[in-house]
Amino acid sequence: MPGPPAAGTPAAPVDFAAYCQDLFGTLARSDQRRWGEVYVRGLLDVPGRKTPARISEQVLGRRAVQQIQQFVNQSPWPCGPVRRRLAGQLDQAFATEAWCVDEVVFAKNGDRSVGVARQYAPSLERTVNCQLALATSLVGRHGGVPVSWRLLLPQRWDRDEDLRRQAHLPDGERSRPRWRYVLEAVDEMLEEWCLEPLPVLADWRGEGDVAPLLRGLEARGLAYLVEVSPTVAVTLPRPCAGSPQGSGTLLELAVHAAQHRGRTPIAWQDRATARMRQSQVLSMPALLQSEAQPAGAAGRPAESRPAQRPRHLVTDWPYGRPAPRAYWLTNLPARNLTDVLPLAQLRALSGHSLSRMQRDFGLADFEGRSFRGWHHHVTLASVALGFDALCSPYRSQPTAPKSMSPRPGTP
Image (cartoon, rainbow, N blue to C red; front, top):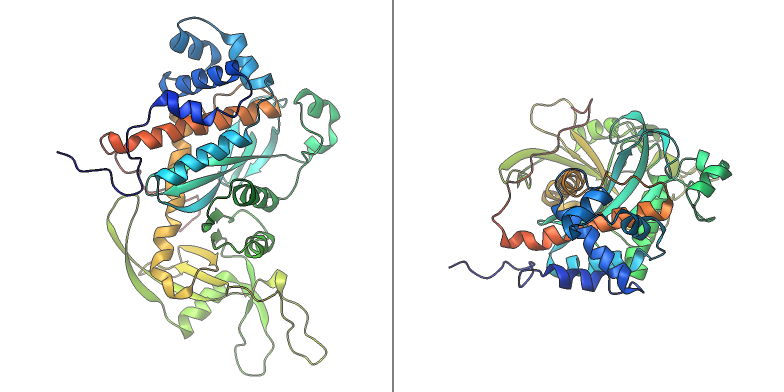
Protein backbone atom coordinates (compact mmCIF):
# COMPACT_ATOMS: atom_id res chain seq x y z
CA MET A 1 0.00 0.00 0.00
CA PRO A 2 1.23 3.53 -0.66
CA GLY A 3 2.44 5.41 2.33
CA PRO A 4 1.09 8.74 3.59
CA PRO A 5 1.67 11.87 1.55
CA ALA A 6 5.12 13.36 1.93
CA ALA A 7 5.57 16.29 4.26
CA GLY A 8 4.47 19.54 2.68
CA THR A 9 1.70 18.01 0.54
CA PRO A 10 -2.09 18.14 1.05
CA ALA A 11 -3.36 15.63 3.60
CA ALA A 12 -6.21 14.46 1.35
CA PRO A 13 -7.29 14.81 -2.27
CA VAL A 14 -8.71 18.25 -2.97
CA ASP A 15 -12.45 18.63 -3.61
CA PHE A 16 -12.98 21.06 -6.47
CA ALA A 17 -16.21 22.56 -5.15
CA ALA A 18 -14.74 23.11 -1.69
CA TYR A 19 -11.59 24.59 -3.23
CA CYS A 20 -13.61 27.12 -5.24
CA GLN A 21 -15.89 27.85 -2.30
CA ASP A 22 -12.89 28.82 -0.22
CA LEU A 23 -11.23 30.95 -2.90
CA PHE A 24 -14.40 32.68 -4.10
CA GLY A 25 -16.00 32.91 -0.67
CA THR A 26 -15.09 36.59 -0.45
CA LEU A 27 -17.10 37.49 -3.57
CA ALA A 28 -20.20 39.42 -2.64
CA ARG A 29 -22.75 37.68 -4.86
CA SER A 30 -23.65 34.04 -5.28
CA ASP A 31 -23.75 34.35 -9.08
CA GLN A 32 -20.14 35.62 -9.05
CA ARG A 33 -19.08 32.60 -7.01
CA ARG A 34 -20.97 30.27 -9.35
CA TRP A 35 -19.46 31.75 -12.53
CA GLY A 36 -16.01 31.65 -10.98
CA GLU A 37 -16.35 27.91 -10.48
CA VAL A 38 -17.69 27.44 -14.03
CA TYR A 39 -14.82 29.43 -15.57
CA VAL A 40 -12.09 27.61 -13.64
CA ARG A 41 -13.64 24.24 -14.48
CA GLY A 42 -13.55 25.27 -18.13
CA LEU A 43 -9.89 26.28 -17.90
CA LEU A 44 -9.12 22.87 -16.43
CA ASP A 45 -11.22 20.66 -18.69
CA VAL A 46 -11.90 22.29 -22.06
CA PRO A 47 -9.39 21.09 -24.66
CA GLY A 48 -7.75 23.61 -26.94
CA ARG A 49 -8.69 27.27 -26.84
CA LYS A 50 -10.69 28.30 -23.76
CA THR A 51 -13.34 30.67 -25.14
CA PRO A 52 -16.52 31.66 -23.28
CA ALA A 53 -18.55 29.71 -25.84
CA ARG A 54 -16.54 26.50 -25.44
CA ILE A 55 -16.39 26.81 -21.65
CA SER A 56 -20.15 27.26 -21.28
CA GLU A 57 -21.03 24.52 -23.76
CA GLN A 58 -18.75 21.92 -22.16
CA VAL A 59 -19.27 22.81 -18.50
CA LEU A 60 -22.95 23.79 -18.60
CA GLY A 61 -24.14 22.01 -21.73
CA ARG A 62 -25.46 25.28 -23.15
CA ARG A 63 -24.15 28.58 -24.46
CA ALA A 64 -23.79 31.30 -21.83
CA VAL A 65 -21.27 33.57 -23.51
CA GLN A 66 -22.76 36.85 -22.32
CA GLN A 67 -22.87 35.77 -18.68
CA ILE A 68 -19.24 34.59 -18.70
CA GLN A 69 -18.04 37.72 -20.46
CA GLN A 70 -19.92 39.84 -17.93
CA PHE A 71 -18.33 37.96 -15.03
CA VAL A 72 -14.78 38.24 -16.40
CA ASN A 73 -14.83 41.66 -18.05
CA GLN A 74 -17.34 43.88 -16.26
CA SER A 75 -18.22 42.39 -12.88
CA PRO A 76 -16.44 44.46 -10.17
CA TRP A 77 -15.22 41.61 -7.97
CA PRO A 78 -11.76 42.19 -6.44
CA CYS A 79 -8.83 39.93 -7.36
CA GLY A 80 -6.76 40.57 -4.23
CA PRO A 81 -8.74 38.41 -1.76
CA VAL A 82 -8.88 35.50 -4.24
CA ARG A 83 -5.12 35.67 -4.80
CA ARG A 84 -4.51 35.93 -1.06
CA ARG A 85 -6.57 32.81 -0.36
CA LEU A 86 -4.85 30.93 -3.18
CA ALA A 87 -1.44 31.87 -1.75
CA GLY A 88 -2.57 30.75 1.70
CA GLN A 89 -3.73 27.35 0.46
CA LEU A 90 -0.51 26.75 -1.47
CA ASP A 91 1.70 27.99 1.35
CA GLN A 92 -0.03 25.62 3.77
CA ALA A 93 0.07 22.63 1.41
CA PHE A 94 3.61 22.86 0.06
CA ALA A 95 7.11 23.58 1.27
CA THR A 96 7.52 26.84 -0.62
CA GLU A 97 11.20 27.76 -0.97
CA ALA A 98 11.20 31.10 -2.78
CA TRP A 99 9.21 33.82 -4.49
CA CYS A 100 10.04 33.88 -8.17
CA VAL A 101 9.41 36.87 -10.46
CA ASP A 102 8.96 36.03 -14.15
CA GLU A 103 8.15 38.10 -17.20
CA VAL A 104 5.12 36.81 -19.13
CA VAL A 105 4.57 37.88 -22.75
CA PHE A 106 1.05 38.01 -24.19
CA ALA A 107 1.43 38.37 -27.97
CA LYS A 108 -1.43 40.46 -29.43
CA ASN A 109 -2.81 41.70 -32.71
CA GLY A 110 -3.99 45.31 -32.77
CA ASP A 111 -3.34 48.02 -30.22
CA ARG A 112 -6.54 48.40 -28.17
CA SER A 113 -6.17 45.75 -25.49
CA VAL A 114 -4.97 47.21 -22.22
CA GLY A 115 -1.19 47.69 -22.06
CA VAL A 116 -0.53 46.56 -25.63
CA ALA A 117 2.35 48.17 -27.51
CA ARG A 118 5.16 47.20 -29.78
CA GLN A 119 7.79 46.79 -27.10
CA TYR A 120 10.97 44.97 -26.21
CA ALA A 121 10.47 41.74 -24.24
CA PRO A 122 13.70 40.88 -22.39
CA SER A 123 12.68 37.23 -21.94
CA LEU A 124 12.38 36.86 -25.73
CA GLU A 125 15.24 39.27 -26.55
CA ARG A 126 13.21 40.89 -29.30
CA THR A 127 10.52 43.48 -29.91
CA VAL A 128 6.96 42.22 -30.31
CA ASN A 129 3.42 43.62 -30.26
CA CYS A 130 2.31 42.40 -26.87
CA GLN A 131 1.26 42.91 -23.30
CA LEU A 132 4.05 42.44 -20.76
CA ALA A 133 3.35 41.23 -17.26
CA LEU A 134 5.28 40.20 -14.16
CA ALA A 135 4.08 37.12 -12.32
CA THR A 136 5.30 36.43 -8.79
CA SER A 137 5.07 32.71 -8.00
CA LEU A 138 5.31 30.61 -4.88
CA VAL A 139 7.84 28.02 -5.97
CA GLY A 140 9.29 24.84 -4.52
CA ARG A 141 9.62 21.16 -5.34
CA HIS A 142 5.94 21.11 -6.35
CA GLY A 143 6.73 23.64 -9.09
CA GLY A 144 5.45 27.19 -9.15
CA VAL A 145 2.06 28.87 -9.06
CA PRO A 146 1.80 32.63 -9.76
CA VAL A 147 -0.22 34.34 -7.04
CA SER A 148 0.50 38.02 -7.77
CA TRP A 149 0.21 39.67 -11.18
CA ARG A 150 1.31 43.07 -12.46
CA LEU A 151 0.54 44.38 -15.96
CA LEU A 152 3.37 46.62 -17.19
CA LEU A 153 2.07 49.78 -18.83
CA PRO A 154 4.09 51.35 -21.68
CA GLN A 155 4.43 55.14 -21.52
CA ARG A 156 2.05 55.65 -24.46
CA TRP A 157 -0.74 54.45 -22.17
CA ASP A 158 -0.06 57.41 -19.86
CA ARG A 159 -0.64 59.93 -22.66
CA ASP A 160 -3.56 58.53 -24.67
CA GLU A 161 -6.77 59.30 -22.82
CA ASP A 162 -8.90 57.53 -25.43
CA LEU A 163 -6.99 54.29 -24.94
CA ARG A 164 -7.21 54.61 -21.18
CA ARG A 165 -10.94 55.23 -21.26
CA GLN A 166 -11.65 52.34 -23.63
CA ALA A 167 -9.61 49.94 -21.47
CA HIS A 168 -11.18 51.27 -18.23
CA LEU A 169 -7.76 51.98 -16.75
CA PRO A 170 -7.92 53.31 -13.18
CA ASP A 171 -6.56 56.85 -12.84
CA GLY A 172 -3.74 55.69 -10.58
CA GLU A 173 -2.42 53.12 -13.03
CA ARG A 174 0.61 54.65 -14.76
CA SER A 175 3.80 53.47 -16.39
CA ARG A 176 6.61 52.99 -13.89
CA PRO A 177 9.99 51.24 -13.71
CA ARG A 178 9.89 47.48 -13.65
CA TRP A 179 11.50 47.29 -10.21
CA ARG A 180 8.58 49.23 -8.75
CA TYR A 181 6.14 46.58 -9.94
CA VAL A 182 8.24 43.91 -8.22
CA LEU A 183 8.35 45.80 -4.92
CA GLU A 184 4.59 46.45 -5.07
CA ALA A 185 3.97 42.71 -5.44
CA VAL A 186 6.37 41.93 -2.58
CA ASP A 187 4.69 44.50 -0.33
CA GLU A 188 1.28 42.99 -1.08
CA MET A 189 2.50 39.52 -0.14
CA LEU A 190 4.25 40.71 3.01
CA GLU A 191 1.91 43.36 4.38
CA GLU A 192 -1.54 42.39 3.11
CA TRP A 193 -1.26 38.62 2.88
CA CYS A 194 1.17 38.17 5.81
CA LEU A 195 3.17 35.46 4.05
CA GLU A 196 6.43 34.31 5.58
CA PRO A 197 9.30 36.12 3.81
CA LEU A 198 11.30 33.97 1.43
CA PRO A 199 14.21 34.63 -0.95
CA VAL A 200 13.21 36.53 -4.08
CA LEU A 201 14.43 35.16 -7.42
CA ALA A 202 14.43 37.31 -10.55
CA ASP A 203 16.03 37.60 -13.97
CA TRP A 204 17.35 41.15 -14.43
CA ARG A 205 19.64 40.47 -17.41
CA GLY A 206 17.55 42.70 -19.66
CA GLU A 207 17.52 45.67 -17.28
CA GLY A 208 20.10 48.44 -17.27
CA ASP A 209 20.25 49.15 -13.52
CA VAL A 210 19.71 46.51 -10.87
CA ALA A 211 20.49 48.79 -7.90
CA PRO A 212 16.92 50.09 -7.22
CA LEU A 213 15.56 46.54 -7.07
CA LEU A 214 18.30 45.31 -4.74
CA ARG A 215 18.02 48.32 -2.45
CA GLY A 216 14.25 47.88 -2.26
CA LEU A 217 14.53 44.21 -1.33
CA GLU A 218 17.26 44.97 1.21
CA ALA A 219 15.14 47.72 2.80
CA ARG A 220 12.42 45.09 3.34
CA GLY A 221 14.87 42.67 4.93
CA LEU A 222 14.48 40.14 2.11
CA ALA A 223 17.06 37.72 0.81
CA TYR A 224 17.44 37.63 -2.95
CA LEU A 225 19.19 35.88 -5.83
CA VAL A 226 18.97 38.06 -8.94
CA GLU A 227 20.52 36.97 -12.24
CA VAL A 228 22.21 39.85 -14.04
CA SER A 229 24.20 40.58 -17.18
CA PRO A 230 28.00 40.20 -17.10
CA THR A 231 28.20 43.78 -18.44
CA VAL A 232 26.78 45.33 -15.25
CA ALA A 233 29.16 48.09 -14.11
CA VAL A 234 30.86 47.53 -10.75
CA THR A 235 33.76 48.96 -8.78
CA LEU A 236 36.86 46.80 -9.15
CA PRO A 237 39.29 46.16 -6.27
CA ARG A 238 42.58 48.03 -6.20
CA PRO A 239 45.03 46.24 -8.49
CA CYS A 240 47.86 47.31 -6.20
CA ALA A 241 48.31 49.21 -2.97
CA GLY A 242 47.72 52.94 -3.20
CA SER A 243 46.02 52.93 -6.61
CA PRO A 244 42.45 54.23 -6.89
CA GLN A 245 39.50 51.95 -7.35
CA GLY A 246 38.30 51.78 -10.94
CA SER A 247 35.14 50.80 -12.73
CA GLY A 248 34.68 47.59 -14.66
CA THR A 249 32.13 44.88 -15.36
CA LEU A 250 30.97 41.81 -13.50
CA LEU A 251 32.88 39.70 -16.00
CA GLU A 252 36.10 41.53 -15.12
CA LEU A 253 35.32 41.19 -11.42
CA ALA A 254 34.79 37.44 -11.87
CA VAL A 255 38.09 37.02 -13.71
CA HIS A 256 39.87 39.03 -11.00
CA ALA A 257 38.29 36.89 -8.28
CA ALA A 258 39.23 33.66 -10.07
CA GLN A 259 42.86 34.79 -10.23
CA HIS A 260 43.08 35.80 -6.58
CA ARG A 261 40.59 33.53 -4.79
CA GLY A 262 40.03 30.50 -6.99
CA ARG A 263 36.78 28.70 -7.61
CA THR A 264 34.92 26.25 -5.37
CA PRO A 265 34.00 22.91 -6.98
CA ILE A 266 30.56 21.64 -6.01
CA ALA A 267 28.30 18.72 -6.86
CA TRP A 268 24.59 19.41 -6.89
CA GLN A 269 21.34 17.84 -8.01
CA ASP A 270 19.63 19.29 -11.06
CA ARG A 271 16.03 19.86 -9.99
CA ALA A 272 14.76 19.58 -13.54
CA THR A 273 16.34 16.22 -14.39
CA ALA A 274 17.16 14.83 -10.90
CA ARG A 275 20.71 14.15 -12.17
CA MET A 276 23.83 15.04 -10.26
CA ARG A 277 25.90 17.78 -11.89
CA GLN A 278 29.28 19.29 -11.21
CA SER A 279 30.39 22.85 -11.59
CA GLN A 280 32.51 25.53 -9.97
CA VAL A 281 31.13 28.44 -7.99
CA LEU A 282 32.91 31.70 -7.37
CA SER A 283 31.87 34.36 -4.87
CA MET A 284 33.19 37.77 -3.89
CA PRO A 285 31.77 41.07 -2.59
CA ALA A 286 30.37 43.37 -5.26
CA LEU A 287 29.75 47.14 -5.26
CA LEU A 288 27.68 48.47 -8.12
CA GLN A 289 29.22 51.42 -9.90
CA SER A 290 25.89 53.27 -9.78
CA GLU A 291 26.06 53.14 -5.97
CA ALA A 292 29.68 54.21 -5.61
CA GLN A 293 30.01 57.67 -4.07
CA PRO A 294 32.75 60.24 -4.79
CA ALA A 295 35.70 60.19 -2.47
CA GLY A 296 35.39 62.34 0.63
CA ALA A 297 37.52 65.33 1.50
CA ALA A 298 40.17 63.08 3.00
CA GLY A 299 40.38 61.09 -0.20
CA ARG A 300 38.60 58.03 1.19
CA PRO A 301 35.70 56.40 -0.68
CA ALA A 302 32.39 57.25 0.96
CA GLU A 303 30.03 54.53 2.13
CA SER A 304 27.49 53.76 -0.59
CA ARG A 305 24.58 52.57 1.56
CA PRO A 306 23.65 51.69 5.13
CA ALA A 307 24.99 48.48 6.61
CA GLN A 308 23.14 45.49 5.18
CA ARG A 309 23.79 41.82 4.76
CA PRO A 310 26.85 41.70 2.48
CA ARG A 311 26.08 41.68 -1.22
CA HIS A 312 28.03 39.18 -3.31
CA LEU A 313 28.60 38.30 -6.90
CA VAL A 314 28.12 34.55 -7.37
CA THR A 315 28.89 32.83 -10.66
CA ASP A 316 28.32 29.39 -12.10
CA TRP A 317 31.61 28.62 -13.87
CA PRO A 318 31.57 25.17 -15.51
CA TYR A 319 34.80 23.28 -15.96
CA GLY A 320 36.64 24.07 -19.17
CA ARG A 321 34.85 27.36 -19.93
CA PRO A 322 36.77 30.64 -20.27
CA ALA A 323 34.05 32.62 -18.51
CA PRO A 324 31.10 31.96 -16.18
CA ARG A 325 27.80 30.65 -17.52
CA ALA A 326 25.62 32.73 -15.18
CA TYR A 327 26.03 35.71 -12.83
CA TRP A 328 23.93 36.47 -9.77
CA LEU A 329 23.93 39.24 -7.21
CA THR A 330 22.79 38.00 -3.84
CA ASN A 331 22.80 38.77 -0.14
CA LEU A 332 22.56 35.10 0.82
CA PRO A 333 25.41 33.97 3.09
CA ALA A 334 28.55 33.30 1.04
CA ARG A 335 29.25 30.17 3.09
CA ASN A 336 26.19 28.48 1.59
CA LEU A 337 27.48 28.38 -1.99
CA THR A 338 26.21 24.84 -2.50
CA ASP A 339 22.64 26.17 -2.09
CA VAL A 340 22.88 28.81 -4.82
CA LEU A 341 22.60 26.69 -7.95
CA PRO A 342 19.68 24.53 -6.74
CA LEU A 343 17.90 27.70 -5.57
CA ALA A 344 18.52 29.42 -8.91
CA GLN A 345 16.99 26.43 -10.68
CA LEU A 346 13.64 27.10 -9.05
CA ARG A 347 13.23 29.74 -11.75
CA ALA A 348 13.20 26.94 -14.30
CA LEU A 349 10.32 25.29 -12.42
CA SER A 350 8.28 28.49 -12.28
CA GLY A 351 8.96 29.10 -15.97
CA HIS A 352 7.76 25.57 -16.76
CA SER A 353 4.56 26.21 -14.80
CA LEU A 354 3.89 29.45 -16.68
CA SER A 355 4.43 27.63 -19.97
CA ARG A 356 1.86 25.06 -18.87
CA MET A 357 -0.57 27.84 -18.04
CA GLN A 358 -0.18 29.17 -21.56
CA ARG A 359 -0.53 25.73 -23.13
CA ASP A 360 -3.04 23.93 -20.91
CA PHE A 361 -4.92 26.44 -18.76
CA GLY A 362 -5.86 29.20 -21.18
CA LEU A 363 -3.57 31.93 -19.87
CA ALA A 364 -3.09 33.41 -23.34
CA ASP A 365 -6.69 32.90 -24.50
CA PHE A 366 -8.26 36.03 -23.03
CA GLU A 367 -9.76 38.25 -25.73
CA GLY A 368 -11.09 41.13 -23.63
CA ARG A 369 -9.54 44.58 -23.64
CA SER A 370 -10.17 45.96 -20.15
CA PHE A 371 -7.72 46.28 -17.27
CA ARG A 372 -10.20 44.66 -14.89
CA GLY A 373 -10.92 41.79 -17.29
CA TRP A 374 -7.22 41.05 -17.79
CA HIS A 375 -6.63 40.82 -14.04
CA HIS A 376 -9.70 38.65 -13.56
CA HIS A 377 -8.58 36.21 -16.25
CA VAL A 378 -4.98 35.77 -15.07
CA THR A 379 -6.24 35.32 -11.50
CA LEU A 380 -8.65 32.58 -12.58
CA ALA A 381 -5.90 30.90 -14.62
CA SER A 382 -3.74 30.87 -11.47
CA VAL A 383 -6.64 29.33 -9.56
CA ALA A 384 -6.84 26.56 -12.18
CA LEU A 385 -3.10 25.86 -12.00
CA GLY A 386 -3.26 25.94 -8.20
CA PHE A 387 -5.93 23.24 -8.17
CA ASP A 388 -3.85 21.13 -10.55
CA ALA A 389 -0.82 21.54 -8.28
CA LEU A 390 -2.79 20.57 -5.17
CA CYS A 391 -4.10 17.45 -6.92
CA SER A 392 -0.77 16.37 -8.41
CA PRO A 393 0.49 14.41 -5.34
CA TYR A 394 -2.40 11.97 -5.89
CA ARG A 395 -1.66 11.33 -9.55
CA SER A 396 1.29 9.44 -10.94
CA GLN A 397 4.29 11.71 -10.85
CA PRO A 398 4.65 13.69 -14.09
CA THR A 399 7.82 13.63 -16.09
CA ALA A 400 10.24 16.23 -14.77
CA PRO A 401 10.42 19.32 -16.95
CA LYS A 402 13.38 19.62 -19.23
CA SER A 403 16.03 22.13 -18.25
CA MET A 404 15.26 25.61 -19.47
CA SER A 405 17.11 26.25 -22.71
CA PRO A 406 19.50 29.21 -22.51
CA ARG A 407 18.53 32.50 -24.05
CA PRO A 408 20.10 33.23 -27.43
CA GLY A 409 23.68 34.33 -26.97
CA THR A 410 24.04 32.72 -23.55
CA PRO A 411 27.17 30.53 -23.37
